[in-house]
Amino acid sequence: MYLTYQLARAHRRLHAELEARLQAEKISVEQWRVLEILADRAGRSMGALAEQVLMNHPALTKLADRMVASGLIHRVADPDDQRRVLVHITDRGLAIQARLRPIADAHGRRIEETFGASKAAALRALLEDLADGHEALARG
Image (cartoon, rainbow, N blue to C red; front, side):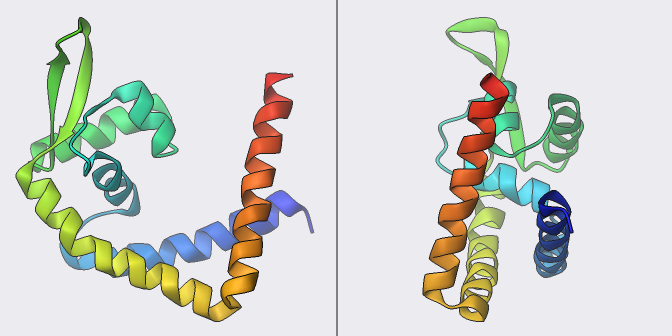
């Protein structure tokens, strides 16, 4: 079986489990990722946020539109460059993120408990190496 298929299969299962747990707040995994990144209240450009939440720009724009309409985030002009927009978390978004953090943390702990700490650490290291190696190959 191809490694990329196995990675996609594992991702799909873990994603579905987390999605089910987040449904109590009617928040998707993608929305949760955005809230987690923005929880530091620093604000991000859409490009930087897209990279951090692993989404392409058009998909993130649609998601951000829905999150703005739900009062989870808001956009403001970048004071250093009026052509850019910065995305910030709202107080409502921060409150939801705080309620979701224990759910996500418990999900991560269950995964680690399934494999044990040493295997989980080894998996993290391998995935980091894989991501870093792929980025190096992509740069040429």
